[in-house]
Length: 138
Image 1 (tube, helix red, strand yellow):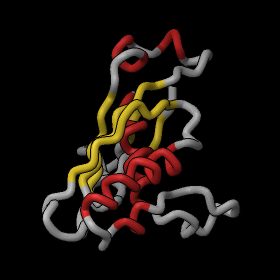
Image 2 (cartoon, rainbow, N blue to C red; image 1 turned 30 degrees about the vertical axis):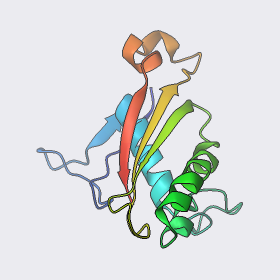
Image 3 (tube, helix red, strand yellow; image 1 turned 120 degrees about the horizontal axis):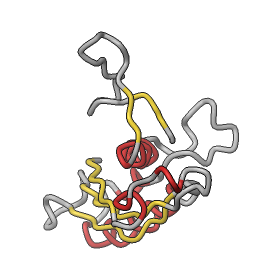
Image 4 (cartoon, rainbow, N blue to C red; image 1 turned 180 degrees about the vertical axis):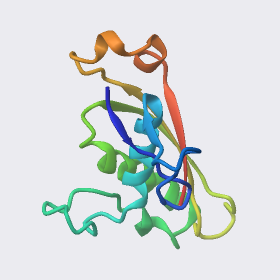
């Protein structure tokens, strides 16, 4: 089963009560990976030699709300296409002040998990079949 270090709201590592690093697994790991991919600017991570990790969502900030909302879905799919273990089933864009230009976005990304054949017997039914939703503030 996949396991990763847990990140807090400001992308800092989280310590458990026993002063050890906290970890995430199950559906929480997919939520964390989606949030991370959407928050990183595409091509800026030093260890990504192909410049494919991250998103270009920041390009819509400052544009009219209608135009921003229409372009965000494509940018989300572009950022998450390399994640072979999930399928994005929907993207909902919320722009707090729809009357002006987009300066902040809230995204709700719905996805289903494609279980790895080696891990499938260990995943619960809610991890395999139900749409999961992650909310990202940008």
